[in-house]
Length: 267
Image (tube, rainbow, N blue to C red; front, side, top):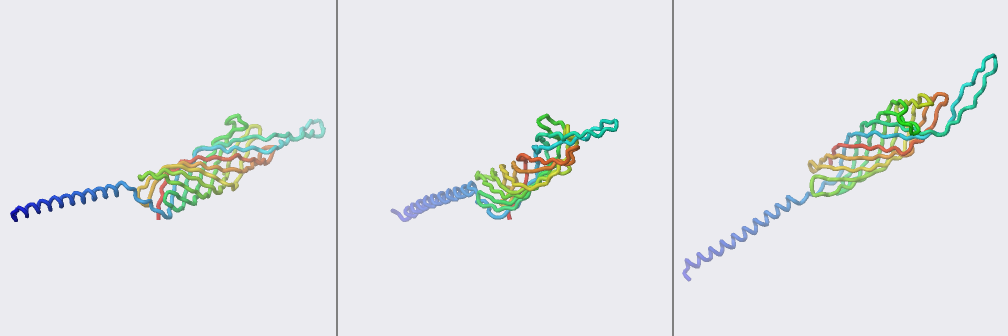
């Protein structure tokens, strides 16, 4: 074969090999780039803080009294006769349900983000105004005013459901302590007159949570969540009942539903 033909053949073979190598390299680069774009980056771990104002929906404070007696004033028969003493009238326990309107709620938390789990310490506050009173199932028969305030401190745990996107559904729950205060709650109870509900006690609290978070950056997110709080074992005193005095009431477990809109920052 002539030298010129040999050179041309060698150049053609080299060109085909170079083109094949270039094509393979370009394909590998595109595949690597596509994989880098589709693979979710690892979620940052570490400490975070959050704040979440929201609405605390109206709830009922269902309380049952102890047995008590209504004092009856002596009857004056006149004509200089001595007063007729009337024995106190015994009253069986009565049920009262104090209703509240939708109010204000806010929470702040400090926690630690693991990969798909979180643990935090949360401080929250709820305020709801009183809207009325039901007595022994007879409907809204009494006027009422005042409000209930709830401070709570709880330890919570969450599981963030991985989706491979910036959206992150979560579920969680916690336990802690709460202080519920009846602030200037005045009720007009039929047959008993006007009474003042007085009570400020500390009890255990439990809560369940669920919601959806959106990561706006590697270290910041916003979320919309639902929270259910349960406060068992609260006690109250209905004070200054006419002809009765003070009566102790025990409350059923109080359930408070809240909707929260907040943000979290990792640092």
